[in-house]
Image 1 (cartoon, rainbow, N blue to C red):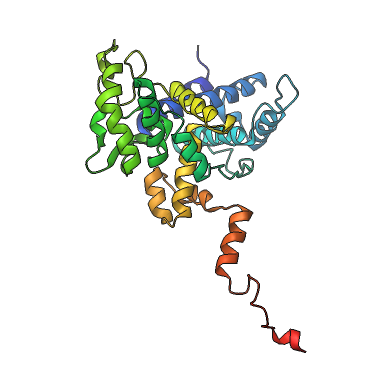
Image 2: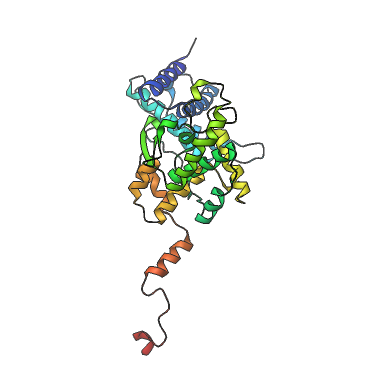
Length: 324
């Protein structure tokens, strides 16, 4: 027989799936974090949410931070701990709002601070090398070149790229319709170089790959695997990494690095921050603002080019303090 904690978790799971309409990946992440939380509670004899207080939640945070891997290092990164606490706080907030418990024990529990990293974008020469790393005219090379060009040109996520259907692409107007997180749709421009690569692939390479199709449901997919099915996220990742290896970029490369590079280069060339936010499909502009952080080298270059007293003064001109 299910205990009270299990019943509340089932109610919360239904709410996430039906009321909030979370995407499958997000729902799976919540379930994974809450499974770890309930195991922690049951190990301490807690099977009723009304018995959880802020001390219990703080202890759970400490438990997550103390977990170690086989090598003795921390098992969970700070970002993973923070994500788990978000799931726990959301669960208890739901229970309190629905009247299942008298109060929310997580009200005064903050998530661990997560160090904010700066995305490591490729420079433009590295992007050129990458986009030239699939030179062949066979179907797979055409597909890989079109995929790389699309990821960099649009900044779309890997899941959005593999989810594209032929009807989502308007090459005449240079637009792509993308289904993003939470089922939100947006229209993204795509540049001439990517349009040429995609047009060639659709006209030739995709036709050959489509001949091996075994499932009708993948008939509309843009990016196909060797069997004619929709390309998976894992296969997309492998294509990017293989191209990166050929371009001499080693393990630095992932589909997300191309997204970072697209945003960074647009801002470097004067794009408005809110336009980039719309392009990337960020719900909050604070997410996009991380791309405004620049390297010390670029700061110095811009400073020396823009500040009137940053450069050496012409010979023969002396400041007032030098004449005294």
